[in-house]
Length: 208
Ligand code: MLT
Image 1 (tube, rainbow, N blue to C red):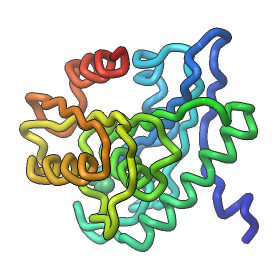
Image 2 (cartoon, protein in one colour):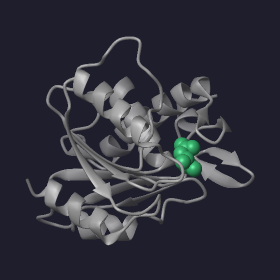
Image 3 (cartoon, protein in one colour):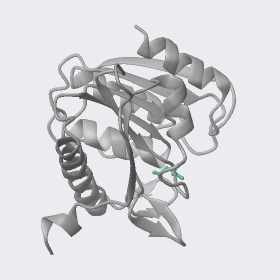
């Protein structure tokens, strides 16, 4: 297999607007979503930024995901690691191809996309400059803590999430904080779906 196919993802690339932010948003959709899902949200959060929006390559009953799972909340850790490496390579390749290698990269992930974004933070800490994780879980427990070097990370959790338990949010926060990240947590009053308060919290956090 050549590097071209091994690291390829179906994706959308949206070039930055002239004078736009020098940051690229990496958009990572939830299970059953695709590369179009988070484009409108990205436009609300960081207008004019370049967007790299891949489609997850693990199909579950036809639904795209970023890595395989064995059951709800039980991840195939071997696949997670392979897919995380492939995604990191893909993002670097696309950034270079479009002359954006000097841009800082902000991950914006929802649910399964937030889980692979957290995995990117733990396995490729130098790839990202910030991360917004909507409804993340603990992707895996790292044997050695990476160095996240004061990286700002927003966890947007939900008080009545049917899928993510509050202990998982607390554990992820601890893993990231131990790695040196500056973690902020927003608590949405509802369930797994995003609310307007999540968007407002992300906007406020990005403007800091
Ligand atoms: C999902 O349905 O996407 C889960 O909540 C998260 C995951 O499986 O990664």
